[in-house]
Length: 318
Image (cartoon, rainbow, N blue to C red; front, side):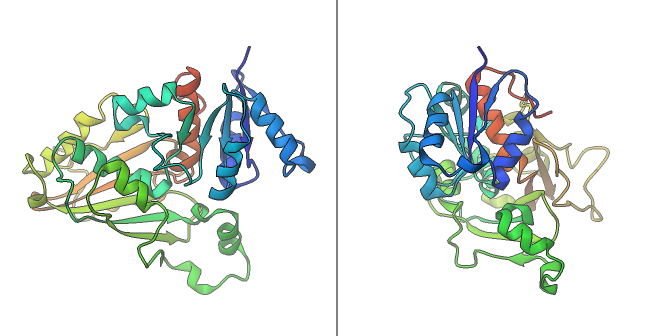
């Protein structure tokens, strides 16, 4: 019998993207709610408890409430909201971080899907901390460029309106009071003593994300060259199917030079993430390139579902 899957909140940006990745799958039974009943608590509860896996694509408060509606002990939940990402009773859904993360997801009944900006930051900082290269008390800063789809339906409508403000054609820094909702997971998952100074930036393109951490080589331990940092990442993520490390920046081809650029939309439409190490032996930047709707949200959620149900990890994603 095929596992049954239900998306609670299919009408939102993340829910629609998950649906698009699952609609043609022949190995699952996708449960759909009648349009006129999508806000009917009784109908939603019936479908959630009939499912083997439920995706919650809801605001935080609604996601917390939805969890209480699941009474079937065999129903497993993947929450795409911020609500449970630092809750120790939930498993953090980033399997590439460690063998322990992957094993926990496979067995889990409650998986918190990572935030988009957090995905980029954690993909960079978690390995450095785990390998002992970056001390936990390092004072870090990070900036993260995103397409406007990251702001959901309201922001998409704002950017795509015919009579929109002219200022929307230029990049906009936001969360200026250092209260962005991804900061708790960025600090907690990486085991940092201090929260990073975080600057998210939204720009006038639909999707794609470039999250960058800038470092002085003197902040690191045990590596002393740009190539050493690149090799550490290459070894850490070796064999992963949906996280890749770009070629050696100091290699013969020298693909990164003074004229090189990294574009925020470079991975738009993809479900994987690329780590790009650049700079020199004194200062460097490490950038995570991915689709905020792919590995930054819906693609990651489907990857976690695949692992939980015993499917090939990349099913429906490549």
